[in-house]
Image 1 (cartoon, rainbow, N blue to C red):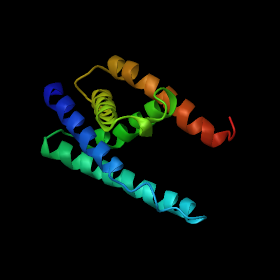
Image 2 (cartoon, rainbow, N blue to C red):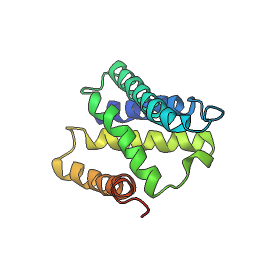
Image 3 (tube, one colour):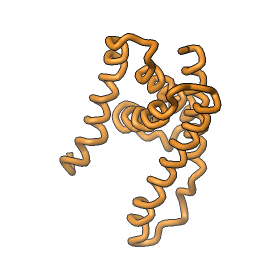
Length: 143
């Protein structure tokens, strides 16, 4: 089960990474429209990445595919906001490999083939990093 789940998750991560990097990032913002663009474009790009990852996992017959497709971006967000720094300055190949590895971690954490202890051991650092790098700056601005 893991022999199919992990490579399929890596492939879904590659598709998701290429989806996010294909979104236009320059030349769209003028004044107050940047805020509106951020509230509209960013969720749409993330939704497209999740849906494409879900489709790739479904085609690879990973069942259920939706936990990996939803957890993958959260793992990527957790690692990039805390440990990895500014990923937008990295070469595309390195970014794609990091995203693929994050999707593999999401596939392992959501797999029923691993014992609960292993899933908790693999998922706990991601939860802590998500709280530290994503939720804490939102709850306590200027931290």
